Image 1 (cartoon, rainbow, N blue to C red):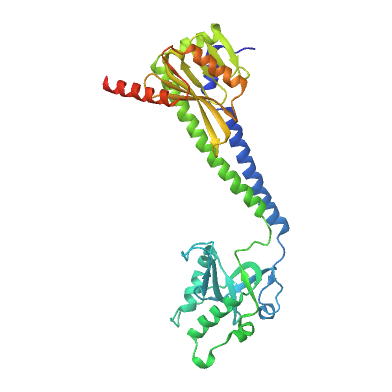
Image 2: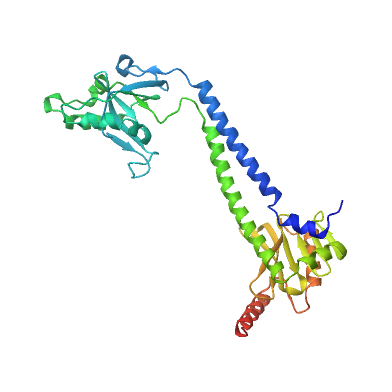
Length: 354
């Protein structure tokens, strides 16, 4: 059943269907990815081993482990790509105390906050201070980097007398040969996290596109309302259609151009001062996008309509030729330096006559 003109305009003013579908797909993708992360963490997380076993000597690497923290130093060393000590992307190493032994841990910001009371108590000089309850932390076991060993030894030696100072060769005996990295998850969810990141970026792009679409649609609605064209457009869509293109989404009536492909684009042919084709090229050679640009006689309003991917097609050119045939005889046609200069002069004349 063919739609009436009023219904065509009414539907065209709504949010484009492809934007709605895009939002739904993005939201569903994020929900599914989050669901997979939760499912993996609930079903694939292994039972943690005790990190203090044998004083962390001979500890197998890449194992999920726990440590009961009773004391904690300030950061011994910070590695990363930024100078911000509070940037969670940096690796921040500490000495943790448990059962009278020292262990190396790599903490994120939230875990350090969790251990703040223990850290404060470690440096407290108040003999009456009550020891806080030890906290359990979880992470993955890793080999201690050689460079880190030297940092830890230097830090430790600053706090003890000269006769109690250590050398790097004694590191394993006092700190073990493994560290506990709480920033690592025992379950690999990199794929799901990557999907969420990509979809979030897509969602941002979609939102920006939606806002641009709304602004453009608002301009067209204002143009139609200010000129009181709506009833005339609806009437001509019913009784004065001359030709249709692009599966009836581009309509040429006696006096109007109407496009409803992605968002509503409408203009009256008699309002046109300049019409031309605009091409976006890749490295100045390959055409990636072609559009018909219409500049109206007010010198301010321009409408980008019939945008297609790639080079101009035969149907695209038929629409352009039809527009050129319908606009006033004094309208400028084509993108040339002469037409650019003439349109600039036309706008200057408009300003002078205001």
